[in-house]
Image (cartoon, rainbow, N blue to C red; front, side):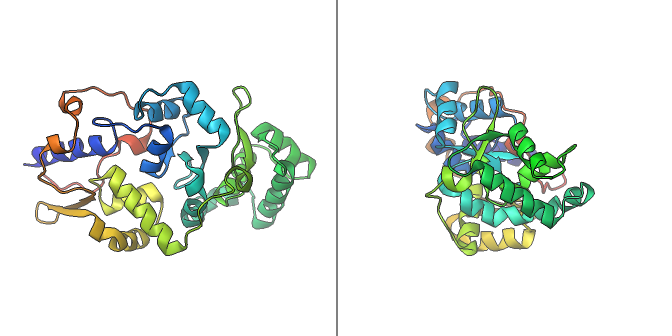
Length: 294
């Protein structure tokens, strides 16, 4: 029984992860589907988008990133994600404070207090204003000239703080070097949502693209407190299907009804046995966190 349920949930997830069945026409549509796509391993992360879109090359994805049609920043968790310009602002406002709270101990150990971070952000903003795009090494030099200690891991956390606060995001690559740009210049038309709208939007995106999934899955993925994750689920629950497994020992939600033949969800190509290479990111192959005992 448990094995049959596990296989069914896995097959449904393979479909919602876009590993079988129809693909999107554009990499931007893939990012929109997931809400945010983990991308700390830059090359494999680009390939992951191309795997889920029709006829896309590495050069195509790279151009979208260079042009700012897809952005890369720290959001959801303390790691990089691809995100659309339209979504970056509200997503950071919703989850950024939570990620900063989760990483506060690192900032304390590095001696990065609020005054230092404010001075750093002001320095970074001035350096990037007017369409300037600088590498982290160049930002380090700018910060040093302003009298800010950037030794060790301090510069990494200073830059991540600026990302999580919605000040900066990715600029176009310069050769093989990543650059940073002001978010307001790269995403001038970013959507603005209030906290309730943002929570509902993120919740629906997650369970649509990652379901069947549990409440704890969503909490881990979004970094939100479980109380907030539950509230988001209550907001959009009418748009999802809830399924209890083993008399409620495991509860999952997803965006289409159970019991529908797989042929109604997948193209014939997706029904064949397939082997797919996955990039080495936990969000892509994470199991359901609440598993009932056999």
